[in-house]
Length: 419
Length: 116
Image 1 (cartoon, each protein chain N blue to C red):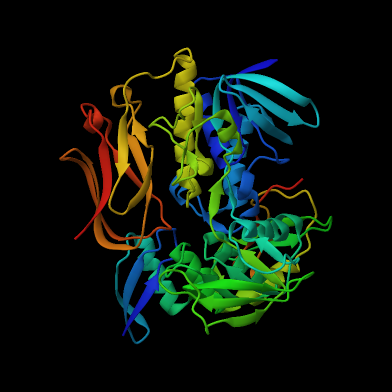
Image 2: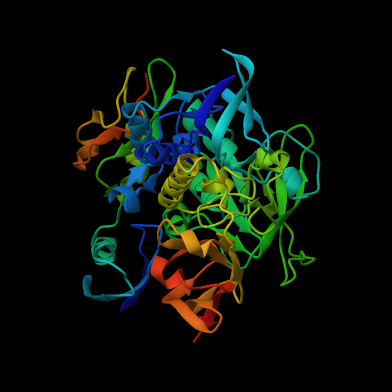
């Protein structure tokens, strides 16, 4: 049985940043397991630009951002094994892996970092009526086909959901010669970034139909078209507003789900709001020595945030190994989301033994204009930050200084105050 | 005349109001940083975009590429067609230039991923 200090599950941006940071903390015996044949994760298929402004102060494409981290992993001689699938993680951190080279193998880890990312909600999770014809894809699948395999899945396209991947695929399919008839969005606002609506839809005259959804899929063997209807404030389709859009391709961009099958089997408690593990300020789950970061923890909008968060997970895992794998038994306070804050990561903080300032990351429940984000411990205000506009598609990052938290021993709250 | 623009430089997507007179920008508000101002200026006078796409190599593999400098917005489709027509052979390295001056726009087209 091979032994490692830190095993990292996933070689995408989260896994690579965690590995680099753990190595920088002096942990030598690390390994990254990646099920794909190369490092980089989903960044390899995100060939559009807009990555890395915070990290590198320049605008990179996904593969460029990934390659910088992969180069660093190789420069630091951090071992990684590709084409390797992690099948199971036990509570005492025995990791079962499967690879063509070594077959099924059990590995002992002092600490494990979960960095498996997320996946898109497929049609089955959306309950759209109709047959199951060929031609219905998640936007990410289409992205992989077009950008990595070189196949364009169709010519006449409708997109359901205005998530960033859907918006970006609207542009991508257009550049590849397809016609995108419309993007339908159930909510009265887009769930994608504003810049993507401008440069992926507006630039190409692609209509965004807010408060609309697909109510029927036509075609049995092959997709023939979809029926789009307007919905009311309870998201119920309004009779009489149905319109038929002939198409050969329907792309679904209806939200991302953290990929937590391994975490569930390990017995890690998940937060029903994020679908990711409940973690403390060191991003440690409720299983000692198992940490989580990146999109498996909560879905991010910026990879720069993923890298930063994962570096902290690497640092915490390194600290856990260095102190002899003893769990942090000090009492933790809870972080309670209130008025307009949907969830927070972390959900709890050990205030007595902080490694550094604490990042509180969250999303809001709706659109808020001219408001403040307020973090309080009881009646005492720890942080207040003004915002012109907050939207659910943007992840917020509020930093509480280490010394502000030092004496706090009651739960803290995070909320939105409208002016 | 005022125009409402959304800055596309970074994911913040600042909502800006631009005061325009005779095609010239008089003032910009709502931006968080200098880049917003520069974007507003260029969006009013000469809107440009970065193109990212793939070129299928002679060996049959798609290679991701980008315009190293943004090109005029109204030339996106011509430029994309010209990029698609480029001939490349593996291996390629990230940063490698495959077109030096794309349709006279002055923009280089570079490879964005090392492919062996």
